[in-house]
Image (tube, rainbow, N blue to C red; front, top):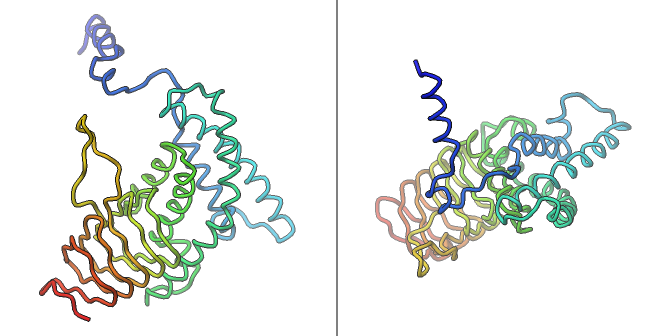
Length: 292
């Protein structure tokens, strides 16, 4: 059993900031973004976009608009606070100084909610039509991991486009932890995006995905290599694939580097690709040859 002196010494050691922490700029003393508040924001947004599925109780047509209005106000208040804290965390600025910027960013994001819903409806349609096991669109909304992860991604991506630090990544990682699908918030994804099963999918930050694209489980859209600056730090350059429209990529395929997969192509399972593929290609693991 630890003595009082031993515990006091241990507490003193753990409370001090080490040189390594200083070098890594691990900041202390400021209010960090709140994961619980971000979770509340996401749940509220889900309810606003798909109220019949994510509200805890039923609202009539007459009262629904008022409830949505109340929730929009709550989303705005919470999001302003979290965006401001995100700036403090990443930019070492005072939270009060960042309030004005956080308000502008929040207002810009809120205006995008109808477009987020429009895109999600295309995703729901794509998933339902490509899965013979889907019994209804409602089942897809309520229970499919593809839609759960895209709810998070469409929200995180809009925040990322606004230049908001840290908050989009937290939102993306919440979906990653529950679905096993890892989509960086900066990745650009078009309409009618479908995922089947999904576990183990990785989509890198500079990936560009067109319309009507289908991914199966285990697909990696990753980087082949990195460029480094004079200090040895990786440079954030385009390094992930471009997937054009109407492409299907089967399970465990790895597509690496800034290459282009031409439209209307099919990539078979377990394929490893590091070069461009022309449109209307069929790539099979057995031959790794392009077949028109």
